[in-house]
Image (cartoon, rainbow, N blue to C red):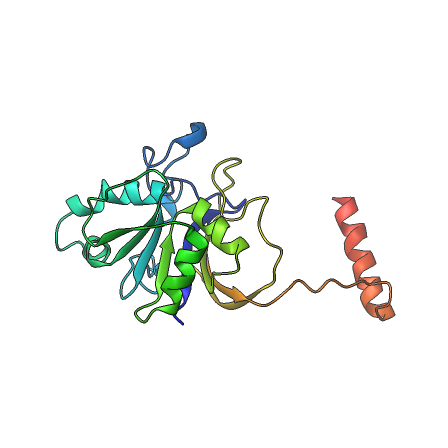
Length: 222
């Protein structure tokens, strides 16, 4: 069984829409495209977190596919990200497209959850989702995602397409690794960790209850 991996650039309030440029995705009147540009630096290893699709097959939603299709095939052949993305096999979820023009691209037919289950059961490299917020939300609800590479940028965007929506399935995650760039971008990898395990301080030992009380007072003072 191969893994399904998500890699996403997000703002502190969870927005992932159009990080790369002003005209990338103005859907819904989004006007802050390109919000990650001023935080990029050489310490960010795109390949390590799957953003370049190296040694993986891509799984893309229609909108992200169309953005990539209009850009990456026209970049210089020696561009490292263009080289890997153009060469990668691409599986595209779309209810409206009937043809795909980017090389190595195929449409996912029928129910997307069933299609991804089938892909995961096949042999081959791991499956990589980039962008594709609606598709991520559908597959998260179906518990099909095995790893999240989330790069959190120190900006608040207020509105836009989000990594997790209101329909997200409640679940626990475990931090597998994390580092911080010189520009304050937190680059974290999470893996699923079962169900949420609620608790209560009512039966906790007195020292923990006192700590919770002090935190509550401190928050109220602010």
